[in-house]
Structures are given as C-alpha cells and as structure tokens.
Amino acid sequence: MNIAIVGATGNVGRKIIEVLEKKKLPIKNLYLLASKKSAGSELTFNKKKIKVENLENFDFSKAEITFFSAGKDISKNYAAKAAKHSVVIDNSSFFRMDPEIPLVVPQVNPKELLSIKKNIIANPNCSTAQMVIVLKPLHDLFNIKRVIVSTYQSVSGAGKASMDELVEQTKAVLEKRKFSSKNFTKQIAFNAIPHIDEFSNDGYTKEEIKMINETKKILDKKIEITATCVRIPVQVSHAESLNIEFAKSVTPIEIKKALQNSEGCKVIDEKSNGGYATPVDAEGKNDTFISRIRTDKSNKNSINLWIVSDNLLRGAALNAVEIAETYYNRNR
Image (cartoon, rainbow, N blue to C red; front, side, top):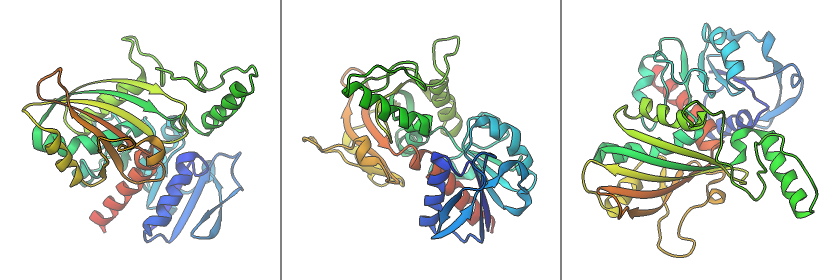
C-alpha cells in the first residue's frame, strides 16, 4: 500500500516512520509531507532518503492511508480533502468527539473500524490511549463504576519546542541565570504545572475534559471519571495514578492476573525498592506498564494503580499505525 504522513518532520511524525519500519508493513511508496518551510528536507525510511513534500501541493489520491500529525488546524483544513481519496488517521483533537467518526484504540474497540462513514479515523489523546488499554480488561471482568485519574505528563506532549525549553531552563537554573518561560505558563524545570491546554468555564482544562469525554466514547459512557492533568519536567513518557471503583469486590491479585494476560499491558509490581515502572523505563517501549497495584482502604470495591507509557509511541504513533494495520487486515 501507499502511505502518506502529514507532519512527518514533527515528534510524532518521525515516530510513525520508526514504527512503520519496525512493523514491516507492505508499503510500496511512503510520502512525507510538511509545511512549505520543511519541504525539501530529507528523512530516512528503510535506509533510503525520502524528500519531504509541501503539503499544500500534494495529490492525496496517491495514498491509500494518510496519517495526520500536524495539529488540529492542519487537520481542520486538509483532512476532509484527503479523505476524498485516502483513509485518514488523525492524531489531532479535531475529529475525536464527532459522533460520525470512530475514536479507536485497537486493543479496546477495534469493531469501530468496520464502519467508517467519513473515511476518517480519530486517534485519542495520548494520556487517554494508555489508560483505556488498562481499563478495558478490568471493565470487561469487574465492571468499572468510577475512575479518578491524576496524570504526570512529559513535556514531549507539548512538542519539540517544549522539550528544548526544558533543557534550556534546567541549564539556566543550575547556572543561576535568569530566564522567562516561552511554552509554559510557569517555570517547568524542577517544577510541576497543574495546567495542560486551556481552561474551560468550569475550572477544568481541555486536557482533563479530553480524558473524560474520550474515555466515555471509547470504553463506556456509563463510567464516571474525573481527571487532574499535570505537566512535569520529564522529556518522554506520561505517568498516571488511577483510583478505580468497581461494581463488586476485587483483589489486587485478580487485577494483576487480568492485566498480565492483556495485550499492550506489562505488569511490574513488586513491593520492593525499584519494583515499579517509571517514565524512563517506559521510553521506547510499546507496552503500558502497570505498578503499585493495591486496595484502596478508604473506599469499598476500589483499587489504586500506577501506569506509565511512552506518549509519543504508545500514546500516538504506535496506536495510529496499529489502527492502520487493523484496518488493512480487515479490508484486504
């Protein structure tokens, strides 16, 4: 098949290229698209140099599948145009809550790929994607009533400029130099910022609202969920603390057994120093790691979990490629 990547030079676009190489999908031609500014540069795929093309001039009839990873404004302006000729897999937030467009995590709701009305498939927020992979097997077995999630999200979720700023600010703090924040509302180096995306009128941020609404759409609208999203000074991988209330009593042993046998999950849960996963451990890995499984002694039928996952890989690029892979296998 022929594949195009919009936003190929960005963090997620480059990661999609890496995943496509490792997956060894039957790709005849790979078209790399970006803004006029990046057009003409070259990226490597399967040891071959491919020139980046200007998105504005691209003929989407050349591609059977097109990945969009360039932000919601680009998706808004170009995805529908691409979808006239190509199946679009969109990483932005623009189409996620459209009732006619499936929001898919292949390990959770692959049946949504059987009916694609507008030729567009939405990829969820990275923090949502890693969470629903863990929640799905638990909901199937024990029926989840409510989820309280607090996230600890890496700066890569805000793009390369934010990653660079973390490095610059860290150096400035250590060297005791003055600086101002460019991509964050507060100092990010040696700090934690309880603010990701814009505030809504009810005090929640858009990132928190995304997690709530997307989880309901992907998994089950009956699940009650609340979220607090925090940016921390880590380059890659998001961590999440989950408190899950079930409809019936469940033990940590039952939770561990269920997750050990679930696709996309890896349990590292030892009650000892270092017997848990951290963001550094998850970087570059395909799985969502689950640790600190324990009973919530303050609330009946509730369990606490700690999960970490590479947000650029598991939460974005890998999920997008797995959507393409699942779609291709079901329709060839």
